[in-house]
Image (cartoon, rainbow, N blue to C red; front, side, top):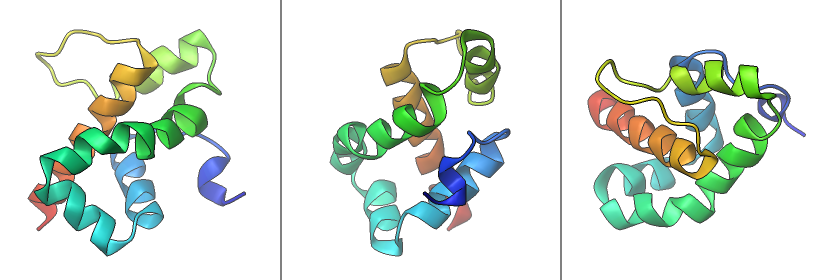
Length: 99
């Protein structure tokens, strides 16, 4: 088990840094450039996010964790599948802004 599997991140920036460490450059490039790669990530990267960052938390911790990824105008979301997709989409935005 890596240190990144021990605890969910406490900020969105920490989550993005962990995803940077988890994914190789080719995977990051594919996510940033191919919308289908983002959709397909739901059952790979998304499952990893759900299993390691979302499911281990109790309800209160999960609510706090999920709020890190909301935009000011977004409605609150609580479904794990939707959450992991949102995290991936925010990560893709981060990747695009980073380049």
